[in-house]
Length: 454
Image (cartoon, rainbow, N blue to C red; front, side, top):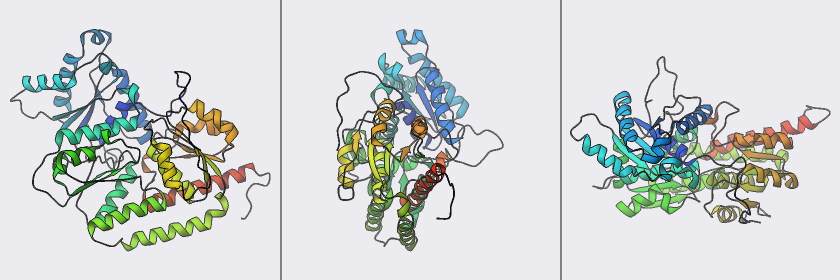
């Protein structure tokens, strides 16, 4: 059953989403030599840094226009220009990614005009970075929408036309650093020349440094982004992603680069689709290592089936992650009873029904634009055995005395959030083991006997 009734109130209690410019800042961090810059007040930058650092355990600098009350009246143009000058001098970045906030969107600051004025005033200056801007008022979307909006803006403002190449573009969306590394390995194994945008594999999960590095190495090189308009095709993950917020659609419309849209490759069926597409594109068969990984995964499903079959789960988070997790749970015999997201694409219920219609005997209830208060209200009657999502579901799991399997972003109460693998057969294997062991552990904890040989 799927429904999404209009709310009879205007309020949110513990929102199941994060703010839009936060997602844009993370996308900018996946581009080589780039410093994220918030055109807004300092508090927004501080809040985002706190959130991001506690997930990745990596330092992150987010510059700010540091606007105050008077700028809400007189505008933030002068602060923006002074801020860009300071960041360019202190960091010497290759690019500054500028995202707006609620304040500057509400007062109507014209960032593109300010940037034109700044570039006119600094014409002839050497060493200036590129400036990319994106509109990200937090009141109008989620961090995932801000992430995709930043990717789209980068492509719109940097990609160029020219002689076609055999390169393929991959725009995987916001996944873990471990997922980015896995996708790179897969593309290499198919012998493809690729550009991945963005790439948080090292910028947010890199080696330790003896001295602080202002702009960590890694990320998608700017010259590779500029060449994306000449690529052979694009692959973009996101069943619920709107065409109006899609970087791959921009390349298709502007440079005639065909777009292949897939869901996140979570679980066996969605990974099969991804690898089949790569096999078709590359003209190669699926490498033997992935055939073996798939075989081991099926074997693990068989081995662990008795511990999880028939269990009931609540899934929450960003829409495409929720859709991917729901398919994965259906594959392993767990019944998703509630799928909830803070996003509001209008596509989530239809996507889940399409992907699980031939697996699940009963469709879960699916809700968009939901908060944790509403999820908690429904959880009591649904009697779930586990919940799956990010750390913000911990109070609910504690109240229900059931396991929380942590996936996605943010994960604040455990280490290693950036190293959780969600994608491919390897990701499904890790998720399966984690879910199954959580169920075994819960059974042991609830038993008067405790551990016994099974």
